[in-house]
Length: 510
Image (cartoon, rainbow, N blue to C red; front, side, top):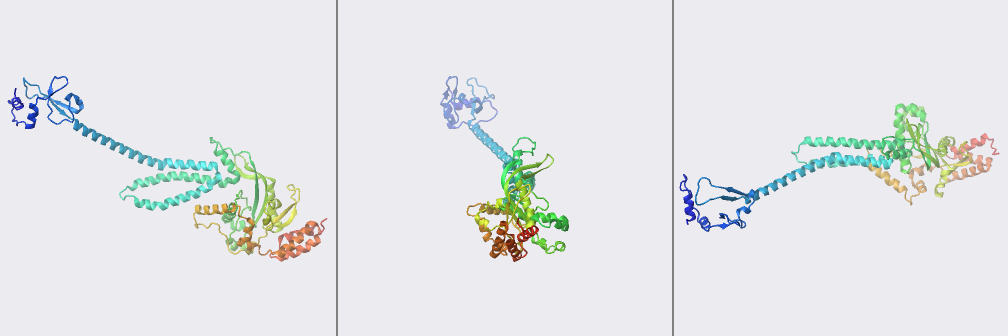
């Protein structure tokens, strides 16, 4: 039996290349005779330290490589070399796992970037638009506040923009950021369009037309049905008139719209502050006051001592709230005899020379403390409207006692959102149980100044005259009214009107 070294030298005895001697540790392994496999068909010798004992057949085909030497042929020995590839395949598997993980990470980051752009540029704007439409559908009048909130959000974005620009990398391409801004602006245009359309709907239809908007917005079809039944409401109705409006229009010409809208803003703001709602604007039936028009040269030349004066008629009762018109044009309004009464009371202010004419129906709804500020000016019936005599009252206010002018919201003074918040706080304060309107009359500086010409002596003499007027003692009443007519300047309108009426009847109440 030959040794392993001898076999090695014998195998390469005819080789054209030189060979070295085998290392001692390898010779020792070869001389050991090797280990037999399970079927004992061959012996194998491990030239390296295996991680575990076993036959070469136990290694998977993908983890081994079999080499058969063909350079030499031996009659005594068949030799195969089996290379264990498991360390290589293990490293390959680790690298493959790392590659797969890296690819997954890249795909995840790419998906997140893509979804972020899709969310910011498409999904979130669409969700905001849907939310806006739902808010307008549920409460059309709330649309007027959406513009203020949008203005606030825009200001916040402008304030945050410089900080975001500072945090961006300088080498970041500007073309992509400009593209994103353009895309965001396109969706913002649609969002702003919805807010503006909702605001215009609320302004155009007002409180009376809100039900029309709600019913049509809740329907799934695209058909618009404006001819819906009205609803009965209990309310306080008021008509306002600008005195000398025809002459003012002739003088101001195309600037009359600026005049009317400027003044209407003041009255509408006050109505809203006291939880009311403006309904219609009809020619002279507008509302305003600006001191600058009292100094207008053309107006003063046409009407000496010109001053913007308003007349109001107030009445309470029921009305039918709804749309009036056809499929070609509709107006949201209120229909009722009580609305007509309020209109007639506004006209009556010119007869009695007062700025405010209130029906007894509304006066009786006020507290006794508030009724103490009223003055009864007549007892009337309206032909075809009121069959039973009704008292008319007024609140004596002389606007000439005021100094300066009133500007509710000067342009540029504050953003609309802040103004809206302040108005909401004032509105909420007026709904508190501790708030009393009569205290407002007693504590407000302007109201106190306008009521200062009307003294206790004046009211004492006037009440004496009116009670005698109602009792039919017109001779006593006429003497009292003669005194009260000249006790204030300008002359008292109700005293003058009652004197003229009694004179037309020959001062005979019968």
